[in-house]
Image 1 (cartoon, one colour):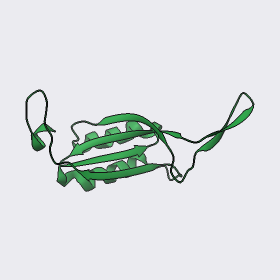
Image 2: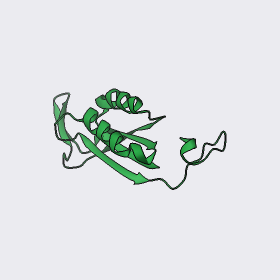
Image 3: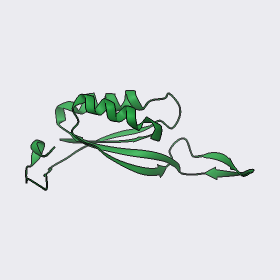
Length: 112
């Protein structure tokens, strides 16, 4: 099993969710996060005063999938989250040693 974690722009969530559901992802977790990378934040004007926003609002999506779906899921996220602009985000993939459904006690891929 693999966990695919992606940090994306908030307005791209629906497109990413739809592309993952089309691949058969059984669920995903979304968290509101803030951070910066190469973008290094930006400046905004509020009531005539300019101020620097160091941490940019983003969404973190986490989805646990079967090993064989890894490449398809990564490409689906990349394609649906891309705007071609700086700050589109990142995708990380890491292994999952075990998973268990709390309600039924199912483990492994059956728990997904």
